[in-house]
Image (cartoon, rainbow, N blue to C red; front, side, top):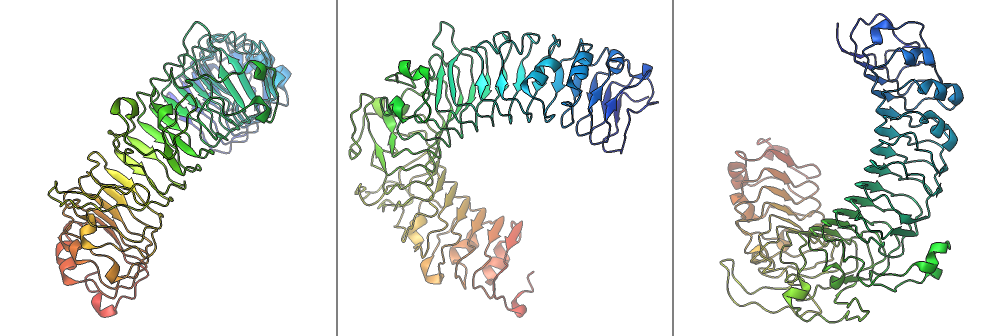
Length: 549
């Protein structure tokens, strides 16, 4: 007989019988079972995994659970276990070996959940998400000391009493997203590896500065009401920090007074911003500060983040790239070169889209020597002209600094987005001496792209987007881009394709919504061996010229 049986969505109303001996895995989800009760189930004595999610379950008998001594995983999510919780909880005391328990979406209140887990001493993974819990009382987890993963997301938790997690010395992963927490202070779970507090109402988050370092690696504080960068002393192992969708307007200490918080807490009296809030975050590789209220990009603030590879400041209020001093001195207009020892950041991917940046200072790219991907979409940047040839060398016109941004001579840059920047014209060799693999220039209405504009990219560029620029034939000329694989020319007014394309071994081409009546013969000769996908919708093609299809 099989050891794994699935009766998912079989229309069952009762626990199945006569499945044979030795079943270890039984799936009963998406049925109509109301009761787990059976007088004798000798064939299920070896059952280790039972899934009864998405049923109408409201009663679990002790007789049934007593016949499942080997059960390790019990999934009961999306049922009605709030209706007989006293009797059910008593029956749960027979689950002596249970390690994984799913009680999600059962309308459980805090005291009900506590009763269900009151004797599950071997529990390792517990899912209480999607219930009606409003608080975590002290001692709620006293009977589950080996718990490692705990999901409390999508409840109504407003209060975590002191000592609620005290017994959980093995706890590594906690999900408290989608609750109603306003303040986390004195946080002392030093052994925790992953903590998700997104979609709450947090105005304050402070780790307790004790003797032991925190083992926390992933912290998600997104979609809250934080006004400042959180206090994270001794979080030396943190690698991923998400602070997106908050109310952070400055990354400098002393920017906010406790009176600016919507709610008042006793903790505010002793809440003092440290001078170097990132000093201990030496392992952070991914930092997301998107969708906040930042007006300046403070390079100095990120200096201590020596492992930072991915940084997002997208959708803020950035207008300038500044060199602030952490002591409070502001130099927003200073675009002079900075010493590499002081200025260099290790960032490889930087997202600045959705701001109001008009220019990047001369020292910007030299301060980011490892930069490979840069998203500057939806800003107001104008690329400068480079006088160098595509063979390299040559003199270059220095960037004026207040009118345009030099995107040339950035040797490691591989991916650049300048979509929706209101760029009217690209100057010759605007991206010379880069290693660009992909370039997005879409959404720049009436953009003029002369043939020399992409000079220097002939043997590197693989993906180019000129989508939605409303360009006619006179507005775009392309050099022979030998390595180009993907090209998007949709949403323009082209009646002819740029002749420079015919030497490219294109794999994907989008020319939809243009004014094309035919495709030139050189295209029909050079592209078929490599072309895998092509979009031509929205063009007034002549019927007589479509034989190539």
